[in-house]
Image 1 (cartoon, rainbow, N blue to C red):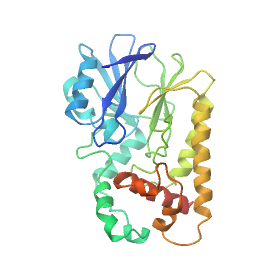
Image 2 (cartoon, rainbow, N blue to C red; image 1 turned 180 degrees about the vertical axis):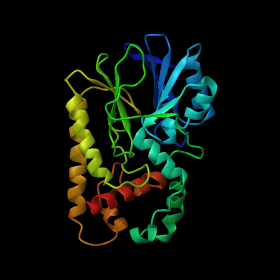
Image 3 (tube, rainbow, N blue to C red; image 1 turned 45 degrees about the vertical axis):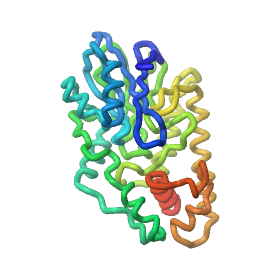
Amino acid sequence: MVSATVAAGVRRVRVPMPGGGLPFSNAYLIEDAEGAVHVVDPGSPTRAARDDLRAALRGARVASIVLTHLHADHAGGAAALRAATRAPVLVHEREAEALRTLAAGLPAPDLDAWGVPAERRPELLAAAVVPAGPDPVVPDATVADGEHLPVPGRRLRAVWTPGHTPGHLCLLDEEAGVLFTGDHVLPTVNPGLGLGGPTATNPIDDYLAALDRVAALDDGALRPLPGHEDPFTGVRERCAVLAAHHRRRADEVAAQAGGTVWDTAATLTWTGGWDALSGSTLLSALRQTAQHRAR
């Protein structure tokens, strides 16, 4: 499948991902009233990803490139697509700030304070590279929460949903009855939190508040179009499940008295089990544990 229609004037492209984890991310091609296409999350910066997206876009005029967030599996292909089409890249204003912060360089996570065993530190340091990839895109413009994007003939509204990253963005098309959810709400995966650099607020609290905002958008017929996996139904119910997951995690963390972040994380319930975590998934687990302890 190169692309498939998932809503009126909206096609999905399953863009391959490297690394052996999730097999693909979703790029969405939104057609406007003037016949141009607006690309949401062009995907990874690999040749295979570029080829699949190029095939889906053959003959189309690309008017804009909208990023739900800065991670390389969503935004990594934006620079190449902009170079090929001259279309501007848009992000939420808070995500633009996060990109500038990441570009300035971040200190490595304090693995000593977390109590990470010496033999596990190399893989975690390797996983702590800039999440936007080696050559993150510099956006051309930003959008604010509640703003309608410049998509002729459609009312595509920006919904700020921080937590996964500081400026994560969902996009609501009320007339089409769809919500582009990026990595904020996925059908089966629990998104990692705090994966876009430092923030003044706790990413878990930000995420829970954003789940409430998204759940309130659901009129019973709203169809979520996620950044990974397949389109699904029941966004309000899925938000409730994700919120309950973090409440259980908070209770698990609170039940552990003392010890290091590593000690606490090793006792928690992880999908696939603690022993299966490595590299970026292990780093994400430790960060979330530290965030719960800090609440």
